[in-house]
Image (cartoon, rainbow, N blue to C red):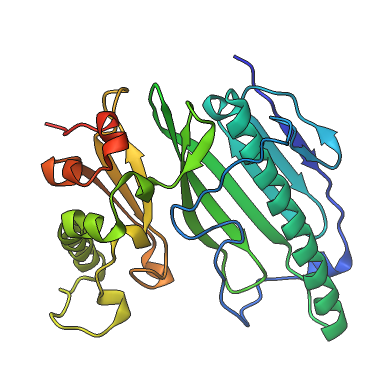
Length: 285
């Protein structure tokens, strides 16, 4: 097995860093590298596959990749598995995102340090982490999920999720929602089950039932397309399960954590799969 591993650790200790504690003056924001749940984009064919770089260092094609970079301003982590790295177009897409996120973090942390210095406050090192994992590896599709985390000097770090499905046949990314006829159709087929599962889990965590007719946003139902939607498989040939990941603040306060659910494909869900992708889905009996 070929594995690409790049570790860049540069520890530069300064008085400001040694004095900096947890800044409780503001709350944590959304992870810098998160997107609208299920978002994806099409790779630029003009870019050389697998040509992502960090600090000017070219990366070889093929295999897993892990980058860790740490300095006085930030800690940056990004990784993806061998199954993704062995697909040149997907590796290029992931490498470009790596470069964008690293550059964004470098710029934000530099500005944050300058603002802290100008205002006489200690600077707390920023961070960004992205870890991609395989959810399903099918003959035509590679379904991936990413765990995201971010810290920007607030009271606590934040975390979230991302997802893409890679079309091996056409070298492109698709949003999981794109496999269904519409977000509304998916909500009609899955929304009631999702709401029921979510409320049951909320009640267990909170120790009190969800009040019927509550206007509290943390008691509201969440639509499937508002979550991080995952396409999964138990047979290695077709998608037969749907995963749902709900990040903090969407369905409850930060302290309540994230919510995750899995639902089997049934006839109602199969009926709203777009005809072009119908053969790639089956009901799980």
